[in-house]
Image 1 (spheres, rainbow, N blue to C red):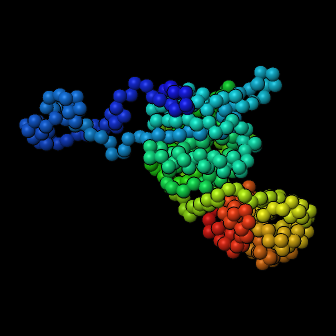
Image 2 (tube, helix red, strand yellow; image 1 turned 90 degrees about the horizontal axis):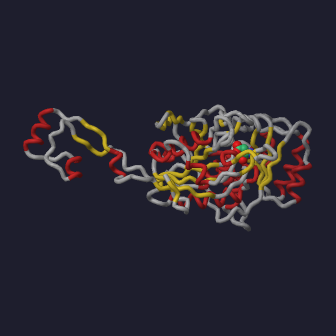
Amino acid sequence: MSSNGTGQMQRKGRKHPKSRHRTKISFPRHILEQSSQVGYKSPVAAVRGGTPAVFPFFYARHTEPPMSKVVIITTGGTIAMQHDSVTGAAVPAVSGADLVRAIPGLGSVCDLEVREFDNLPSPAITPDHMFRLAAMVRQYLAMDDVSGVVITHGTDSLEESAYFLDLSLEGHKPVCFTAAMRSGDELSPDGPRNILAAVRVAASRSARNMGSLVVMNEQIHAAREVTKTHAANVATFQSPWWGPLGVVDGDRVIFRRAQLGRQTFLPHSLCKKVDLIKLVTGSDAAYLDFAVSRGVDGIVVESFGRGNVPPYVIPGIARALEKGIIVVNATRTGGRVLDEYGYEGGMLQQHKMGVIMAGELSAAKARLKLMLILSQYGPDGRPDPAEVARYFEHSM
Ligand code: ASP
């Protein structure tokens, strides 16, 4: 493989892309005898302009269409870092093309194009970056010869970007986020293997209609379910209570469950501001009042258990709702928020006040979803709270 300078990776010495798809098929003896009597040529002989076939088998094209192209978009993260010789700490260092150049076996999966979006540590990624990344991905997915997109990203905020794109892209083509827990200059780096697996998934027909995926450590996770569970271990990405959608086993991509009820929001711009407030024991209304004072359009509160909050927070929620601010409640535990506790601060009280329940979404993901939903109403549009609630109730 080589780069032509525009980031386009080219494979050398490949004469006819279809020739790789030949599968050997055996035929019964009487058919072979008939075919050689009437002078049929085998497809191989025909391509070479040769004499009638005498081989005891034919070649035929495999039923899968020719492999098409996967676009790898790089955004940064540990996968593109190396250790600084002075500080000894990992810093952004590796270009997009260099990241994929030396991965054994990658070039034989499919054609590749590499595009550098940025080279940022992922705590520096903002929702605006995600919005622009979604626009870039959308352009590639619209191309007929592109079967899917791989995005390399830092692991710290990967689940947020992956979920944002899940909500921002229509269509059946897969978008696979991948990353590394170890930089390329550490012992046993995990990045190259993760990129290879992600490209296999993005090139696979079985990944269609699965939305945005996270491919790490040979597992395939749904963007809306996955979370980073460990600060250092390579098996950090897990989908608690759900498990992975599938696995990459060698060169095989295997899915065991599908994605139901995907939603897409396509605002013209990300024009609405949403704050996330984490509640802990003893929390009061101060941060809610602060959010209201800085003119937010929505607030996500990260609650306890079934959505319950300290009672001292309730007056702040009431003041936010009075101002027309949408308040969404997401639990810190995982599992569904539900209005089954009737005490002061319980989810039943909040629900009756007009607080929207985020279902099983994490607070960070609920915040991105609320930004996208509210932005659909435009800079001056007032949201319909019942409609916003339905988006959260119907799906993750
Ligand atoms: N701090 C890094 C980042 O998220 C960690 C990683 O890439 O895994 O960019």
